[in-house]
Picture (spheres, one colour):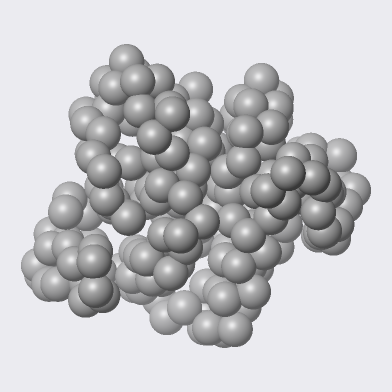
Length: 202
């Protein structure tokens, strides 16, 4: 159990990520005191997709192959259509996702990013959400899809879209701080109250 101020968080993305889904968690988690790094497949800066055109360029801190999951407490996966579609066919990216999952680290995916969880065979038997258009992908992979702002199940946090970012970030902090390891308690926030039990189920 650690405080968010002591946490080290990795955001993994490539070109075409949904702009707000990387920048908002990065900035808010840093503001909360966490150390946040951005990893890219090539170790170079990446460019966002913002609604209907290319957006901001985000600096990279490291290359995927240089990352050791043991150095981090959580992995955050932004969405967009292009970004997770490219990453799910990247063997280094998928090895990293599986590495975080295998170690029981917090893995948080928003919008289309649950595609990476599907590719890692990590949704089977889990309750989760995503952008509505990939609902069938999640269900076909054995996930129990729900239409909620944020869902946490055994350390995997998922959200639907940019409008859910406040709930998404709050739940990432809650998971990192070890709520799923304590006695059942409520995660309070309007519109996405959850009971988190000792296993992380909500």
